[in-house]
Length: 591
Image (cartoon, rainbow, N blue to C red; front, top):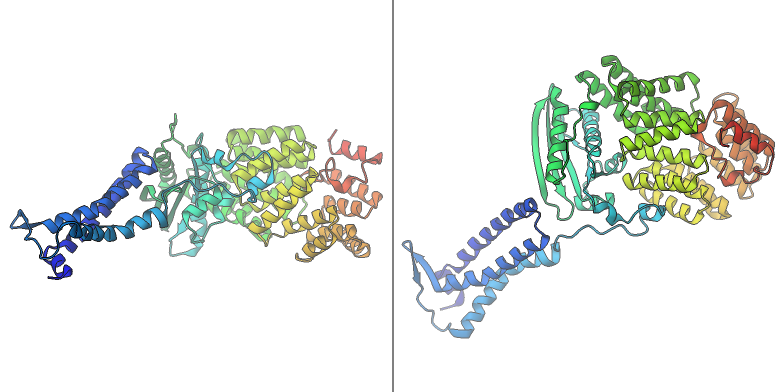
């Protein structure tokens, strides 16, 4: 009788299939139990090994015994298959049956392990000495809130999904001891079908919160799930079907569930009460404004300001809407070369009103801080930045703006520490990466600055300001070919003209640099061109009179947030011995 016939008669194959299904079920039960009791990863490995050993045992028992009429009976011996030869065959069959699952778990999948730290070439470790090892971040509870997927039939509801994501992120950022990846970094993965463990590694977090939102009329459905980055398994998931008026309550429930799943011990659960509005209309308008604010273009910043104004009309006590309006106006004056004392006054009034409504709103303190930088009121600006950071330690933008103020004051080491912290919080932010390179350049650490700029361009090769700053750095280092190659990669219009003029001036193409400088001066007679843009151009050309004239205009027009950091910037090395330089320091309130 053949072996195959004998295996069929003794129903060995059926026993193996049944055992395999049972083993799979056991693993599905053990896995969540392991997470719930925080057992080590080795426990699951032991369970897999034990189940694998069970396959030869099941084969042997199925060969020897059979179930007949509800009774276990010994099967009639087979002819020709006995002793050691039979034992070897049965064990071999069991090993073959166990092999696929065992190989996949121990060799292909690999036992669960923490994601490796980024290589030294990654931006956070490659930038500043103040950045701690990545393991220092992963050692504390950490999470990234990925953009909620918009499942509404209307694509125009994208703003709602993005807005809820940002509000969840801000809510979790209030949890003491929980590191939350920055908004810019999390949104860099929007629409990308990338492995969650890879995302967590890039953002240097141990957990990922993802989900979807569907809005229909006055109803919303929010589905969320919390995933462990070490092994990709779910720690918690929930779906909420609620009225639109309950959106804040849902956010609070999600945050509380995350805190519970991460086993964080809090005196009080995180709550969005202090950031709420009683008006559903105001909240919807605020989310629309937030969506356009994050696009950061000339038109989108205008639209953002309009929505924030409408939100304020719907609820005059909505503090966050005032912050949004202040930031939309303030940032627009920097992004698109707009100068208006009236607009600046509106922005400052909005920030002050936000603080009247909520003195503990960190974003409002940061907004007021950058406006005080415009006015060269350094001590009050520093005070508000520190207050913003104390209230919201995970607010990367506050630390970025604080670093900008510090570098203007000549406090390079402190500026490097703050921008390093901002990078750690928001490692893929284009503007924070660029500022990190700029601060390293101002510190005369050209090698590190070059490294940061290159890493930043690896993250966002289309971000022209970073490429422009890299070209200027190359020119400062005397790398003529590299500087010209980089500056030719960016458009010749707008703010890039001043970068091109500086590079040309420092690489021996003086006539072209002078032509661009004259064009900028002529443009300033017709439209607003920041004097802080003109000053380094004339300094690079060695025209001290025009450089000082531009610096005086910086004082007059109060262009603090544009710079220039005259105390540290290598561009002004040729001016510092001139008696007029002291006058500039005085009018900028820098001594």
